Each structure stands twice: as C-alpha cells, then as structure tokens.
Length: 147
Image 1 (cartoon, one colour):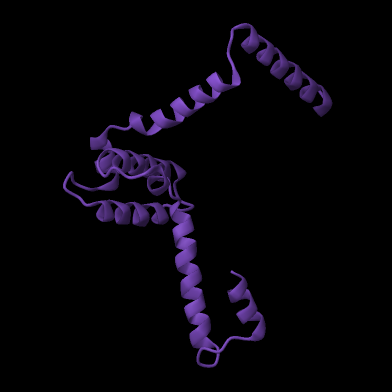
Image 2 (image 1 turned 90 degrees about the vertical axis):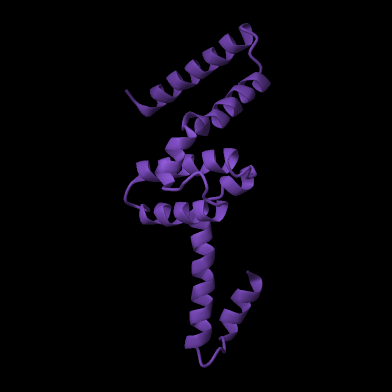
C-alpha cells in the first residue's frame, strides 16, 4: 500500500470522525474541555504518599528541598530512564499542587531549561576568566549584548 493510499484512508477516517462528532453534538469546545480535564487529572493519579516516596521527601519537607531533590534526580536520569523521569515529573506536579500550593508555571517548569541557564552562566564566567582577564572579543561582546 502506497503512502498516498494511507494518507487518503487517514483523511477519510478523520472526516468520518468529525461527521460523527457533529451528529452527536460534540463541539470543539467540548473536546477541548475533555482534553484539559484529562491533562489535569494525570498527576491526580499519583497518590501524595507515592509522590513523596518517588522524590524521597517527608511530609515536613520544604518546597525548596523537594525541588532540589527533583532537580538532582531528574538530571541524573537524563538519557538513562525516561520512565523514572516521568515519575519524578508527576511526583513534583502532585506535591507542587497539593502540598506546596505552587502555580502551574512553577510546578510545570522544565528542569533542563534551568540547567541550560546555569550552564550558560558558567560558560560566560569561564569565557571571562580564560580570555585575557575578562576581555571579550568584539564578536563575543556583540553576542552577549544581543542575548
């Protein structure tokens, strides 16, 4: 079966699904609500005690302690175990929401982005130290100013 045939079949199936949804009264808004509801219930599936065990924190741990443990464990499992990383993320979400009252922006933050920022700062520091006592080349100065 060629790729064109597969594409046509998928396209027809999608059209049929949309037609069936319209007939049953499902609107785009209803579908979005269902998706959002399922997303928000993902972390609710992990009991709070399991979340504490996954992150190796007690019920008396502070938010900073929990985030530090999460960061350390998550980065140790980078490229090693996606499953463990997923468990860590769900545990952080659960504790962030229920125990620490964190906003979504905070509990959903990707730790790899934080690592990147830290690496960037360290690399800039090394550049300053290793380039004639803190002097940058003209190109390096322009790059730093534009970021």
